[in-house]
Image 1 (tube, rainbow, N blue to C red):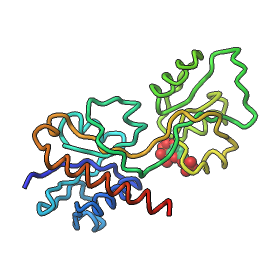
Image 2 (cartoon, rainbow, N blue to C red; image 1 turned 45 degrees about the horizontal axis):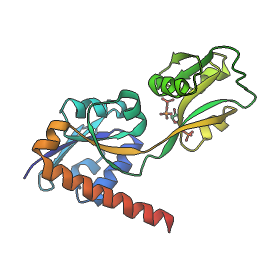
Image 3 (cartoon, protein in one colour; image 1 turned 30 degrees about the horizontal axis):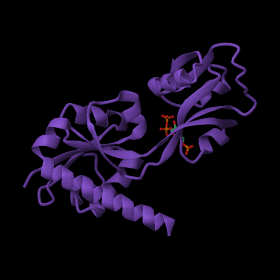
Image 4 (cartoon, rainbow, N blue to C red; image 1 turned 90 degrees about the vertical axis):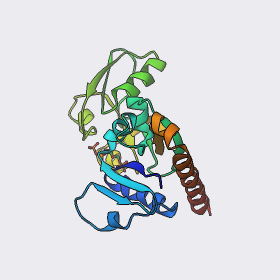
Length: 216
Ligand code: PRP
């Protein structure tokens, strides 16, 4: 049987995503035992999983170290990897937003200081508004920047909104909705087409079933 190499994002999203793969028929019992291994396979189901840092999934897939992977739409918009996007898994849902202190008003009089982990998304958004900005690239705890006066606004992921609320910040604009996507390496797509196409179909069906269940 063809083995499909799958890069899963390590962490909370990865666990949710693995449950989708399992429900779609790609279980791998070894992965469910808590340990620190990074590679797991189930030859019977034709899958080999790797746990990868979420922001690195698209690198593994683009370079063919993994045939497929699961990455947030935020990562795909930011890094624009040369891969195929095959399915929206409808999990890991959140929004890319502009946020600032509740009392902040942008009067447009000077260059806006924007702190973010996503400089390209921020630049694309503000250039669509013809607004001059100064990007301050940070790697985490972005919400601190406006509190300390390092930036005027942030461009960041909002999921429940708790981090913003607990730090006196609020959403000022929504840029794009985000969810987890199945992506494929372009060469793998060609050479393992039947296996990957089937996987994408089963996962898309799984996502549709979940969506229905959530609506009921
Ligand atoms: C993300 C994001 C926000 C938070 C939003 O941070 O950057 O800080 O989650 O979630 P909420 O709306 O449910 O509060 P992450 O946990 O990835 O950490 P980091 O960016 O600070 O490293």
